[in-house]
Amino acid sequence: MHTSIWPADRLAEARAVIADVAHHGDHLIRLACNVLVQHGETEQEREDARILLVVIDARQPTRSAPQRDHDGEVVR
Image 1 (cartoon, one colour):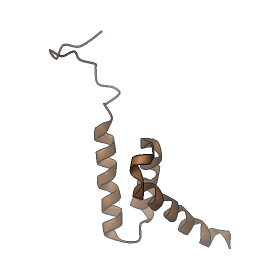
Image 2 (image 1 turned 30 degrees about the vertical axis):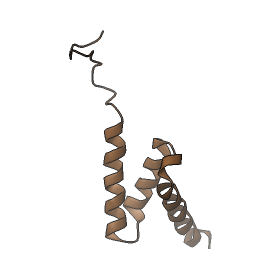
Image 3 (image 1 turned 90 degrees about the vertical axis):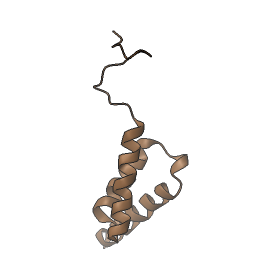
Image 4 (image 1 turned 120 degrees about the horizontal axis):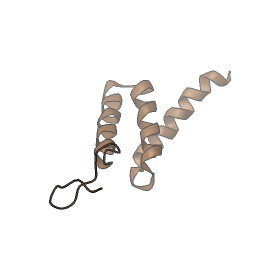
């Protein structure tokens, strides 16, 4: 019986995070988006979650990219 309630609860939580995205950290937003990408009820909901993931990822500097100064020189 629990298994039928679990997905609905996770979807509701994910939607709540996305609805109030300004008050949540990127990690939680990513988790919510991943839930919606995989389990969203409509193609539009899944696509919106994919787009938000791209936006969140674009806000984060790439960890493996070298740091550069204002002139574009690699900072060591």
